[in-house]
Image (cartoon, rainbow, N blue to C red; front, side, top):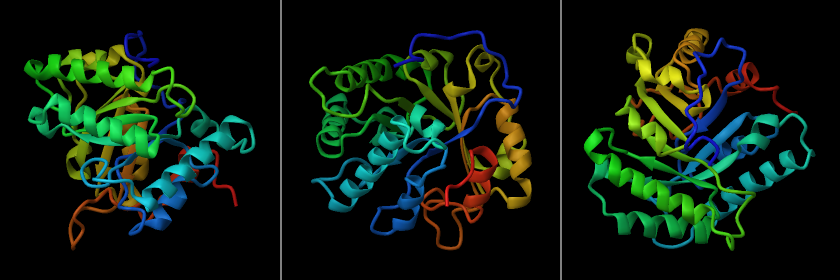
Length: 276
């Protein structure tokens, strides 16, 4: 894992660095086929996307999820081998992550490892997204044990999955005790509504790390405020983002389950453009 032990000395990004998307979990591919197709589309600057069947891998392999996972792998393979020159961000990322629900520290180590192994065996995931990750100092040793074991599973020499291990992302939604930055590749330090994000402040300790160490998920972002939202993300030092105008209201149970109405626009703003 390239960032697991390196803190670096990077300051806030000046805005020259390129954003990429972290997609926290589209709906099941049977319900959201267009969303999963878009994630595999050439020119989409995808850092990673989370696969979440039933708050985890589910009870058995799902054929629709197997197909969606295969499409993402194929898109990354094309980018890696130069067949899609626009996909430079995808070639550096483009990973599929299995969703592990930590339930704020209440799930057992054994349960989580069993879920991780199922994701590896069935869907050949590149890494893991640790949802509802606790952020307090008291939970740090348990999270460190878990991420260390997951890294070993991902780096196993006999594993026929991808090209090297993918990222471990902590779904915190807030700034945790600083030690968490040393146990994973990336931290989600904001997950919430635009009304909070536009007045949010970043923890001072994050300035010691480069932007690729942090991700922000923001829902309810109006199209007219996209530029402002991206300025905030740059200023706060986040390199991975997911902004949507969905707000979790009007029957929407999860604002991140579908792509925003301005998806093509935001892709063209932060990526090399959509390949027609």
